[in-house]
Length: 289
Image (cartoon, rainbow, N blue to C red; front, side, top):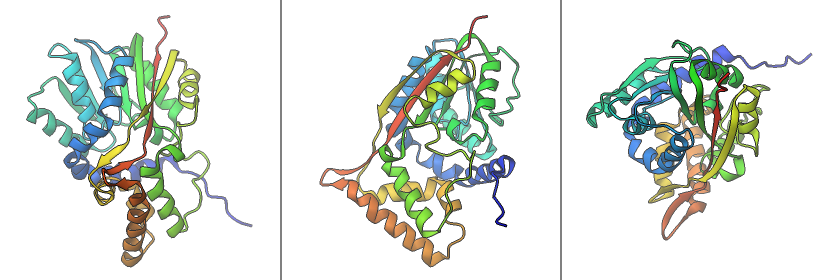
């Protein structure tokens, strides 16, 4: 009788932490690209969450912290941002970037987004940029965010929409899945497009108990001089792709990256490369009662 493989959230968290420890330096190095690509959606997220000067903001799965710094600038000297992530090495780069910019109202702390080690009712806003999608228990994470929010405060998240609208990322995933003969994701396994369907992010917020939930779709193409530049960005920064390739030989890996570049070059013309990407920005409010 065939053994049914079950998704193991603890193993998944361990490997995710290792991935981001490895990719930390590259993610930091590419921060100008990240700001150009994700900056407009980040600004919209902070506006939709009504972030104001003097606010205390908690950033979950902050990564190299480029959006944490945007939030720190918005809340000003009287405000405060706590950038958290499962991988402490990537947070070191967030602090480095803050120091480079002369920003001193930001701190970092290693933290699991499903088990927040901060007091209840202690933040005005909680944000998560392209992080919530990778949490094994999204409801647990959202309920933790609700707990640490002050009554009336907002949680805000940015997620990818659907596979077909995010070819810059779904193309490499598809090529690798086919070449490595990977099975489809296990039931309950989180992933980049897990909250991208129409209304899914809003429903997920409502299920966790948030009110005044709304979302907005943002077109956010990955603009680069060539498809080769995009492949280099993904090769250096997207640790999950390397994990998927783990079972292949070096020659097979190289062939996979060649095919990825060939497929992505379809989004390049005389004006350069424009990799299709669509994001959903969602917010929900903690009830006052």
